[in-house]
Image (tube, rainbow over all chains, first blue to last red; front, side):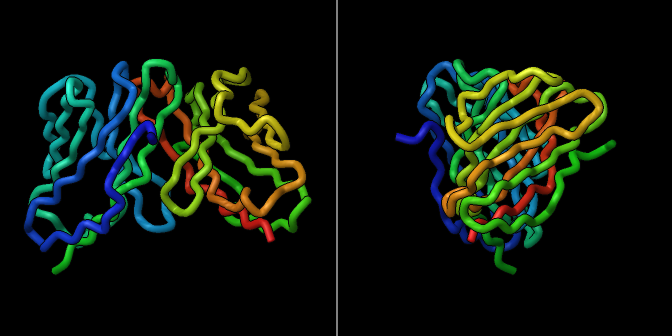
Length: 112
Length: 115
């Protein structure tokens, strides 16, 4: 079992709709959770971080964390074509202080 | 500098040749991380440094891979006797503190192609 799992996609979303991305992790002691966006051929860019259970909103992005279920999600509201990218879930585990475990990423395609 | 600078952008090596990649972290960042991205999306942690000291090397292959961060020099990742499976994009990232809850700033990566 991979430490961080995501659906690979592609997730096709009509422009203006909500994109919902999911991520599960295996280390119950994980403390920090991140969502990175990576455009093809580019470096990852941090868009959200979350550390406690519940929701965290930043503009059109909302991250949700449920440590009991070992689940973190990202919602993108009012999806735009510029949101088309691969979204990487990254987790800092209990025994991995100083490094991140990445999921394989979910490709999102926003269609006009 | 204001961004993580990685050189070269592309590196082509024949199997068995040596490859050396460089990374200059953002000025003031004490932590440097190397990640390997194979097949576009599989990120693998390799090694991290706190200044010139190895912080975590649990992801480094035991053979052929080595890394250094020396004072007043770019950090480097060296692969001796490259193999086809080493073909990947190698990303360097830096942060002010360990990545526990700190934003990592990534460089643009070095695309290594082993032929």
